[in-house]
Image (cartoon, rainbow, N blue to C red):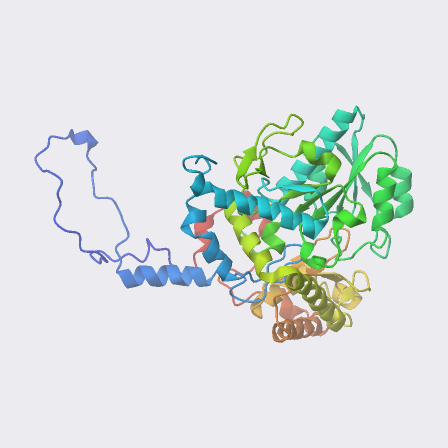
Length: 485
Ligand SMILES: *Cc1c(COP(=O)(O)O)cnc(C)c1O
C-alpha cells in the first residue's frame, strides 16, 4: 500500500475552504515567505477514510480474533466498563478538586470507589490494605520491593539479597535490583516447581525476601507454596506474590492465606482493562498488617461522619510513587467488573481460565512436547518435538504459521528455561469453538512441521510484511518502510 502522501492527486480535495479572512496587503519580508506552497496530501474524503480503515485492519487485537499470548492475559473485557469509566463524573474529575467542603461533592464519589476497591481487593487476596497508586505490574513490584526495604531498614535488619526462582517473570529480578537488592536465582526441578533444597541452601540472614510469580511462568501452582513462605519467614524475610495473573486462582484461593506478605495485582490483565500497547495499567499493591505503615501516600480513609478523605500524615510511608492516586480510570473499570461478577462470577473466571488451558494442553500434548506434563493453571507450555527439531522447525516458525491461519501467535521463547517454548494462555473468555479452531490449526501446523517443513519456512504469507529482519529492525528502525508494499 502506498503512503498517504504518495496517493495524493494534484487538485483533488476533500474540503472546500471558505474565502480567506487573512488580511492581504501586509508587508512581510520576502525571506520570511515560503518559496513555494506547503506540500500537503491532496485527497478526497473517501480516499482518506479508506486509507485509515485499511491501516486499522492491519492491526490485530483481541477484538479481531483469538490472542493466546501466554503470561499476558489478552482477553475480552466487557465494553460496558469502558462506558462506565467514561462517565463525566469519573472521566472529568480533577485530582486537585477539594476533597471536602466546597467542591467535595465532586470528589467524594471517586474517593468512595478507591476506598471500596481497597476493601474488595483485601477480600479477594487476604491482605490487610492496598495502595492503588502503581501504574503497572512492574511498578507495583518496585513499590513492593521499596516497602520490603523500608520494613527491614526500620527493624535495623541488614539485608541485601532477594531470591527469585529461575522461572520468574523477567520484571521480578529487575524490580528487586532497582530497589537495590542483589538477586539470587533459585533453580526449578524437572516437574517445574521450585527446588526446595536449593532454596534452603540459599537461605541466610542476608535474605530480605523472595519474589514468586504464582502460578509460575510454567502455568503451574507450586504445591510447596506454604512451606516456601515459612522458610523465608524463618530468616525474617518477606514473601512477595506476583499476582499479575490472578485469573488462575481468583475466588478460589488467596495469597494472603498462603503466607505472602506483599502482593501486586495487574488490574489490566485480570480485572477488565484491555491490555496491550504498553498501557495504561494499574498494579495495586496489598500488604499484611505489619507493613501497612509503609504504604505510599496518600491513602483514602473513611471518617466518622461517613465522608472520605486522603491521609498524608504517614511518617513511615515510602512516599509518593506516582502522582495523585494512580490510573483512576483503570480502577473504575476493575471496580465495575468485580461488582458485576460478584463472588460466584470471579470464581467462574478462574475455573474457566484453568479449564480452557487444560483443554488445549490435553488436546495438543500428542502433537507438541509439553514442557511439564501435568495439570496446569491458566496457561500451558509446549516445546517442539524431536522430529520438528530434526527438520529445523523452531517455535518461531509455528508462531508465524498461526498468523496465516488468522490467530495471534502465543508467547514464544518464554519462559527462558524451556528450549523453543510455546506458551499458550487461552483465557476464560474464549468459547470451545474458538479453542477447537485454534487447536485444529496447531495440529495442522504440527503435521507440516514433521512432514513438510519447507511449507512453514515462508510463513506468514498473508500479511503485508512477512518476516522482518529483527536485528536490523531494532538497530535501523524505519517505520515508513513498514507501510509500503
Ligand atoms: C505482565 C506481568 C508483569 C508485569 O506487568 P506490567 O503491567 O507489564 O508491568 C509482572 N509479572 C507477571 C507474572 C506478568 O505476567
